[in-house]
Length: 232
Image (cartoon, rainbow, N blue to C red; front, side, top):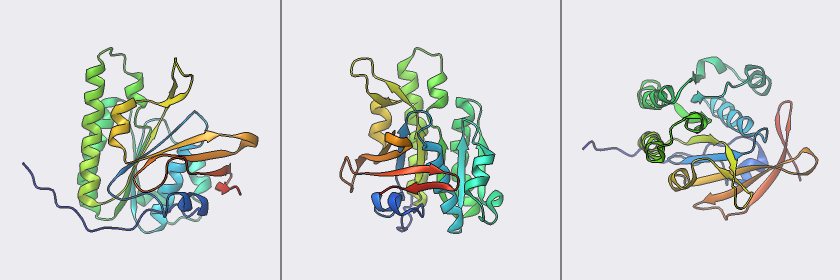
């Protein structure tokens, strides 16, 4: 059995947007995985990109595992003025579940190599699990657990935050939108946030699970050209 050394505490990763940082009491916690889920077009990827850009502006690198094709145009738009973005954004575009697993496995080596990785983001974690044609629920659960276990091990070892984006499905009984992966993913998360579309084009970020923030706390924002804008 390999002994894992736990790194010394680090500050939270802020976004640099007052309403988001205020809701999260400073930002994303190190050593845990934060999940952001919501319906299509709600702004999940915008949040992931903004946390990534903020991390780079703070002098760190970001490992970004992309399963859906991040818009380079949007990334350029909201990262204007960020120096050495391409040097500090380690972007993996994965095309299968196997690619995704390999990318996660590589993260430990990359963190050790660069020494200043401040965030691991996966957008979206469940895309290829969702597209799998297998009817073997046990195999899918095992896949979730394997990837999440490895990711958790890395972020605990190096005391950095991880952020995963998740998709939703409509529960046939309640009609509510639920994050894909159910209990297995929920159990592995210490922080879960939902992005909702609300009136007049606004978005609402709601705390669904957190070890130090009350469930149901929220903040409203709008998606704008330069990123997001807080709403009173």
